[in-house]
Image (cartoon, rainbow, N blue to C red):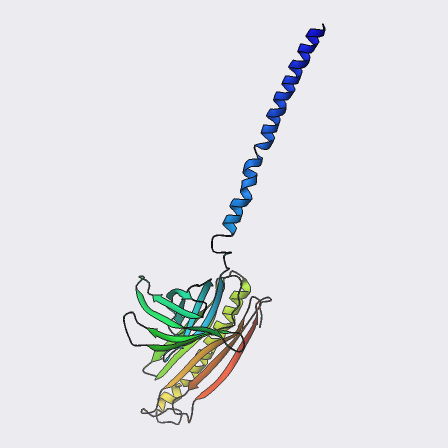
Length: 289
C-alpha cells in the first residue's frame, strides 16, 4: 500500500511539473514579439538622420522682371521645397521644386505640364522686420546666361485645412465701343463649407456689378447715337475707356478673410482717370460681411 501511494505521488508530481513547464512556455511565448515591438516602432518614428520635420506651407506674391501679379505656393519639408506658381492675369499653374540650405540659399526649378524644365529660380530666403519671409534673386531659362530679377513676399494666408485662394478674371475688349475690361478677383478652393462659398458669391457679385456699371456708363444711349457729335460722345481720336481691378490679401484665416481691391477706370473724353480702393472683410465662421 505504501509503495503504491508513493508511485501515485510521483506520477502526480510528474504531471504537475509537465503542465507547469508547459504553462510557463505558453505564457512567455507571447512576450517575445511584444518585447521586440517597441524597438521596431521607435525605428519607424525616428528614421536615420533624426525626427521627420513637419511640412510647412507658405503663400507668396511677387514678380519676375516687369511681370507682376505672380502668386506662388511653397511647401517646405526640411531642406526640400515644392509647389507651384501662376500669374493672376493668366491663372495657369507652373510646378516648381528645389531646396533651401542652412544659409537660406534657394534653388527652384520650374516645369511645364509635360515635365520639361522651363526655368530656374536662384535666390536667398530671409525674414523681414515683421517676420514675413522674402525670397529674391534671379530667374533664368535653362542653359541661358540671361537673368531676370525676381522677388517674392509672404502673404498672410494661414488656412489650416488645405484651402487655397485662386485668382479668377473677367477680361473683355470691345473695338466698336473702344473699351477694355481687366478684372481679377479671389475665390476660395478646397472646402465644402457653405460659408466659404458665400464669400465666393459675395466677391463675385461685387466685381460683376462694378464691371456692369462701367459698361453701362460708357455705352452710348439711343439719344447719343442719334446725335453722335453731342458732348456725351467722345471724338473718334480720343482714348478708349477701360477698367482694371486688382486685389491683395490683407489676411486669410479659417474664420476671417480680408481682401483689398484696387479699382482704376477711365471713361473716354474724361479729363483724368479715377482710382480708389475697396475692402471686403468677410466672417467665414458665420458666413457674412
